[in-house]
Amino acid sequence: MTPTFLLTALVIVATPGTGALFTIATGLARGSRGALVAAFACTLGTVPHLVAAITGLAAVLHASGVAFQVLKYLGVGYLLWMAWRTWRDRGALVVEGGSSRGGSWRSVVGSGITLNLLNPKLTLFFFAFLPQFVTPGIGGATWQMLALSAVFMAMTFVVFAGYGCCAAALREQVLSRPRLLERLRKAFAASFAALGARLAFESR
Image (cartoon, rainbow, N blue to C red; front, side):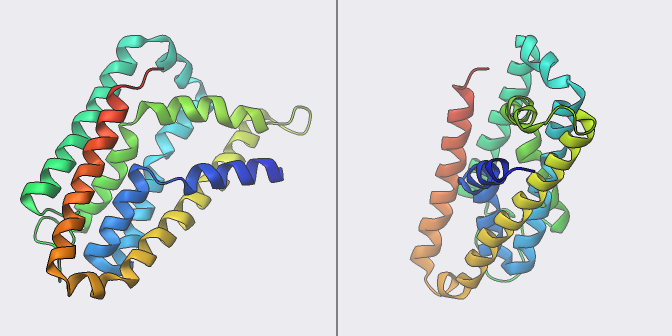
């Protein structure tokens, strides 16, 4: 496990994206407990991509333009649906006082997993990223990939949980300002829509 891998992984994880946005929104909506659940769900959502990278399924996804496009547009559709729900329906991601009327803890877990699961770029990213840090001659490549994956997942959870808990710490201040609450809700909706648009225009 080299310092280069740790630093690179930290930069990648800490860069705000869909998972961080989701965790922050959930932290504001449900407090620190919700933030931890959201962070855990987003971390689980990376598992299929890591498995695909380790087993070589990412190569199939890369070679098949149809498979990539199908998964990509499923992800785009889900992000746009999240944006619409946040803007219009005040669902589980919306910053509200008390318990969210739009869903249960199960919906938080499901949304967090789905957000990462439907992003084909993650599979191709891990396929290109992890092998760079496998050292020949010191053990099986698969075991090294698993170890690297475990560290990356742990780092993802810690960083996302940190984002969410920081948001939760500001929850009372946000809830006491209705105008700010409304602006944040619209900002989260617009951010999900923007992330969906960016994914739509990305290629392999």
